[in-house]
Image 1 (spheres, rainbow, N blue to C red):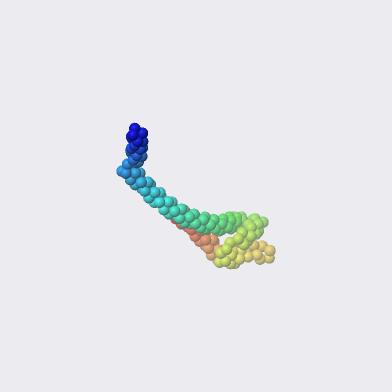
Image 2: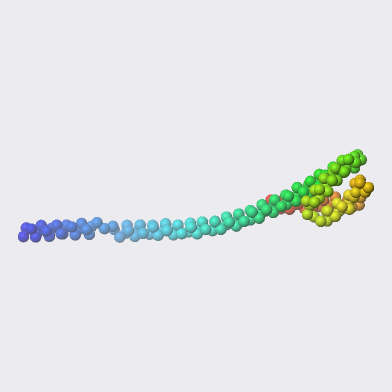
Length: 167
């Protein structure tokens, strides 16, 4: 009997130990609730991340378009300013009647005009500056129209560049 008593006491102690080793229900529910809140925050953060990534892609596309447009405008502006530079050289040479410089500047300007995409400006150039008997001659009425168009194109490009930069 002593033996049965000892076995039953041991079994009773083991069963009490097993029952007493569990996590209290309140603590378990608190940890589960905290985990659920963290998972919800993580889901929200992942959604925000996807939204920010989409905005970034849109901004990068807009930037690339802006960059391309600005480079194109600057390229046009460079070409127009090069023409303007040589035209001013022609004007200076005409003022002092330096035929050699007039010829050089007209040749440079004619070469630069090939890069200009504005057909009206090209046409005005051809009617303002003509070669007569191997010499460049200035036709004043078409010249004024040519200069007005050149100024208009330069100002338009400057305004276009300013508008692009302001966006």
